Amino acid sequence: MLRMRTYFPQSHNVKDVEWHVVDANGKVLGRLATQIATVLRGKHRPNFTPYADLGYRVAVVNAEKIVVTGKKEEQKTYFRHTGYPGGTKFRTFKEQMQKKPEDIIRLAVKGMLPKNRLGRKLMSRLKIYVGPNHPHQAQQPKILEV
Image 1: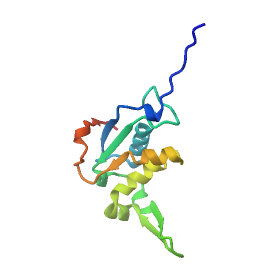
Image 2: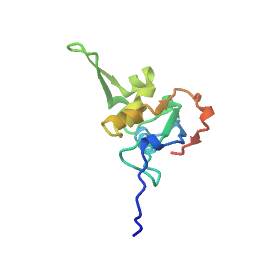
Image 3: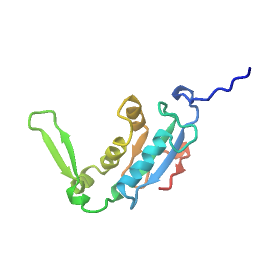
Image 4: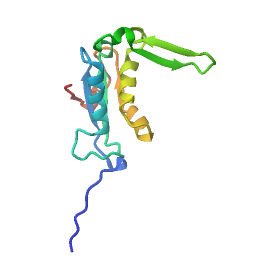
């Protein structure tokens, strides 16, 4: 009797790496982050496997031109800790945009990925740049419309 077997892609069998470029100019933060997280996981493809890194990379340009809706610009805060007692630091969205605008997108995407080894590996596949230039032209990236 002939048996059909289901194909499950494995991370170590992925040969072709696919690059995507996203322009964040005028895009809403949460909507952009969900699209990026979907592509990094590979959920946009029919061979999606929840436990595998399928070889997708994303480069985001113009990170400083991201927008948020409502009053988030004044009310949304970013938390970090220095590691010392009483070392809590808070920044509003507006302050974070002036200091490190790329961290805004990085934290939004990180919250939408799995909280395990796979999520950390996928985060290393995300490259965020301030300004319109990126060094990944040699990878022939596809433009991702959001």
